Length: 416
Image (cartoon, rainbow, N blue to C red; front, side):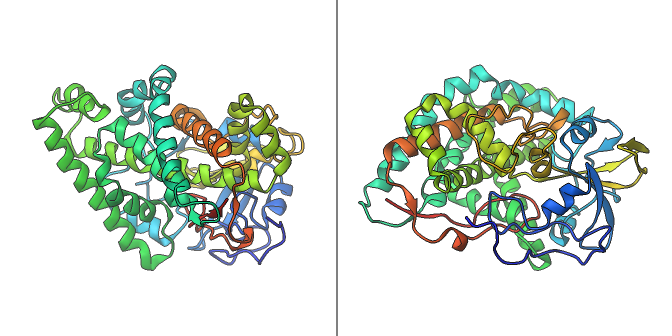
């Protein structure tokens, strides 16, 4: 996709010292226009949010890796000083409780993380690999049955249903209900504008109600899924209440497939735009784990991770005062030339282990082992079984999500 597309869509008018933020991507896997200027300002600078509030933007990899685990920076979204990127997100904050894992601090965060972490370990994920492979093949069987020359939306035909089916299997959610929460999950994570705030909140409430009802059904007919384990070892032993368990299941269900589906789509686009990298990967599938890490670095779909300072923090000659909003840009951290040689180039042979595509510190993505396995299998199977895959429209006609929460595409028309 060309780097020079339309002018960026911003959310507020900012001064030269604190430009408007966030900035709309014009190419879904490249830096938005204006990011180079932000990168040139150094590892930390200031930006202006939609409501006129000025916040700190962290762009340096080393600075960010020091700040991510700093307990003086809080993930408490209910703190009225917490920086919010859009009116929709402010409206969602009006709910009664903070979202588990992502919107709370220790010790609450640590307790919630311990509840679910064992199910996302390497051994548990490796046991799921045959299941992931089966889903990938079944979806491609259905897609390829349409015949050569057909045009399909790879997002809805492959990239979304595969991780959706996997998280349903792991969590214990009937997959036949996936259309109900797939659509609602996209509203929760990707809706934009104040007029969609109510829609996003309604979608979250409906998923929450669905999972609360599912907990009742699983109590009546127990099984051996993650949700069953949480019911028997946490809920019934009084370690968690019904609302918190339903909220935790909602976060796992929504984040467990939306993020990975967007990464599969963005990775496919990026590889098609870099045929020499694509051919290397087709010739040697053993490169896939390294390629997945590089694609996570390159695309950085969870670009903006927000914090609020509970105490003064001095870093890189700057003073972040208590109450200040802090935004850690994973894309700019992943494109830091001090940490990565030729940071704006895609190189599937790169040792990109210092990327922060999965976050960093105590809030690092709990499902990263599962996401890596899903991406490896989804991409390897797609490249192997559809060797003539190509975009069905010019790359700059692929719709790009709003910049507020999760980067990605609205659809991905392909043919073969």
